[in-house]
Length: 212
Image 1 (cartoon, rainbow, N blue to C red):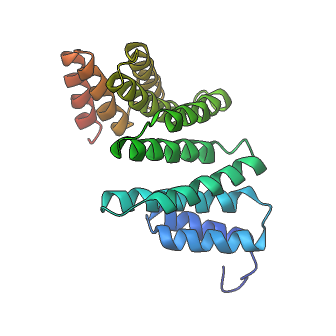
Image 2: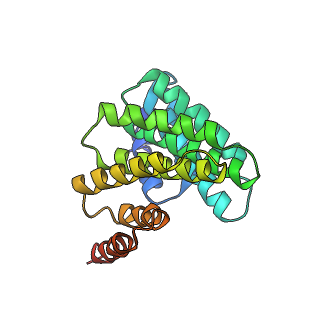
């Protein structure tokens, strides 16, 4: 399609999305950039490029590279996408996850992660408000709440209410999609922190069962 219609924004977006699914983040970023050149006011190009940059940041961090530049680029693009279309739920979730990644990086370097986590939580509150039946939004909010509670615990703050709210979100996500394997695994961690060992073991078993 691109060879026949190189000025077709949708073709570049579609190929960018395909590269995202394949975790080819550099090519996804390049194709989204071309879509932005063709339609600079369209939100989807910025969303795709932001998602690609966040994926690259996560990969860089896992490989021991500094993810800061990619994270900052992701946040800029996702901010732009949401300014153009606040109803893009996937972009809002990705913005929240980029903030979560930023908070994790701050914490690993001995700095305060709470502002980044609070921003992520606000994003996901809005995502859940706009799409209350979307399991992924509740799962991502559970992840943020669990990270926030853990950081508050390490700082001597009240953390148990936040941990319980994280568990509520994990349960709500799994009620909507019981085969969300990552949610079963992540749910087990705050269950262990709260000393609910049998429930944590059951969550791990559910994660294993979801592979069948």
